Length: 357
Image 1 (spheres, rainbow, N blue to C red):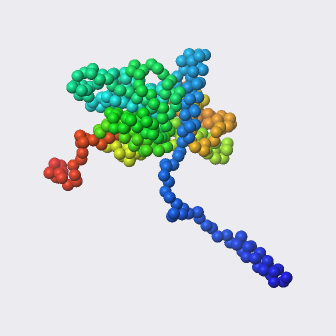
Image 2: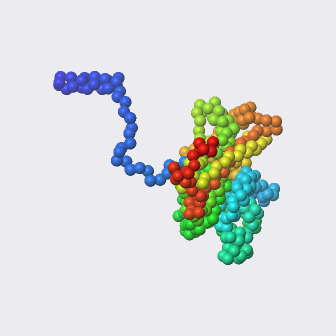
Image 3: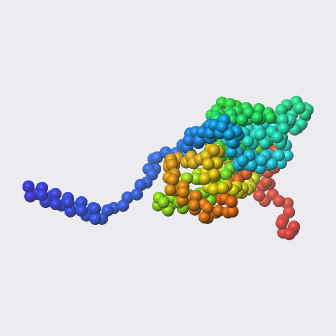
């Protein structure tokens, strides 16, 4: 009996010692754990599709009561700027697919700029009018894809996931057959943007071109800052309210990693003024551009929103309202082809720069 009591006391003292001097351990990844086979997921694509479908339903309801109420000013502005870059191509593309097309804002502008007739060098025998330019639109939201029917030249519409669209038979059939792939809106909602750019490159002919626009990291920095300050003050922490976006300095490496050559990137900032932060957030909702980050908080409390509006006005307010910045990153990349200019091999120069300078 005494031996048992002594053993219990000894164990108690040992346990007390262990509690008093805890030993820290760290979690480590087992070397036998296989590497991940899928990219890290950032966005909730089904939620984004529902947001855009609901935006189209609200638009229909508004049209039935008060007439047209389309909130397309941002997408139309991006489409105009992107079309200028396509128009500068030496030979206008004869087959164009718009990826993440929404209602086809880029396709409409390109149809006005390029028309339906092909360049003679692109037609059999060089006879103008023998063939017509071909158009495709790809979008994940069925409501947005079929919203408009006022195209001058009706395109082929395909509904597909933006993150894995090559699995669709209609798109897979276009591998290596397109002159150009364009995208004016939606790339900022794709988590694996390198994978998406690579899939687009597979659709291009040799020497085909990708021309796209994506919203950059300075987009809505005023709203992001105001939300963060308001939540920090009212909740003591910060939640994910605005999606992560790429930086302009990252864009060239993204194109290169996706296999494009002769890459070009330029940035334009557009500032739009609103009466208050309420109108800005309402328009974002009606554009289908609400938050869709995985693990986000479903709602924002009223006191946080009121604080956000007050901070927004105090920090950034101007006469007559508040500004909102949209940073547009325009990217051009070419699918490798035999006729592309290539840099000479290192050391092959015939003349020294010392002789020239």
